[in-house]
Image (tube, rainbow, N blue to C red):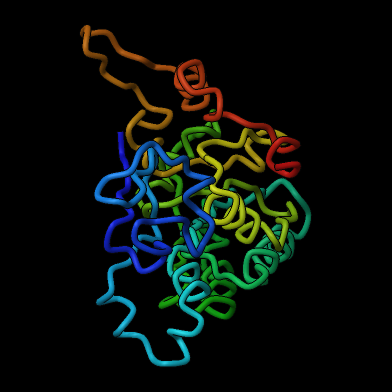
Length: 259
């Protein structure tokens, strides 16, 4: 189990410690005290040493609580399945990309558009390069080869562009909440609640999951088990087993929006 010792953290209040300047200790759960400082029963990603503080400018030191929260804004990637059955497929894609581009206060870490139609690639690339700075938001086209009767496997094709953090799945033409990244940041970094998997609201649209968990469970592909058997279930079915151990693993969109 990951734990955090508040000793030597610039946000630890007083010695012996009486609180946390970011009000995180109470939310994470104080397990005990060691050397007069809290021992938390969860990992705290805003633990910062004195060296971090002195390297900030005077203005930044006065805003150190704001600065550290900016540092831990979650990395969110977006996988978009191009729906070529819709009229004006490219216009529909642009609508979805604009919602991702216009995220409130935060920036998407990367975007991958999956398509099985080569003839759309040039237009897709033009839209991506015109809308996103690659240094801020990496963007990729995932060319699907062969038949993908199971859309779940498209996620696995896109996953080679994944980075640590969370991934959001949608299809072209779907609207994306422009406060999505802000809501995820609020949940995990302000409210200090878990976020592992949010189930889709329709089809695969709206699926959110931790990249690390997807990798660990081998996504939607076969997963060799310790007993020599193969777990060939889709990712979401595999997650159900994890949810039996930790009920906070799975949540619906209603639960996510209400939290």
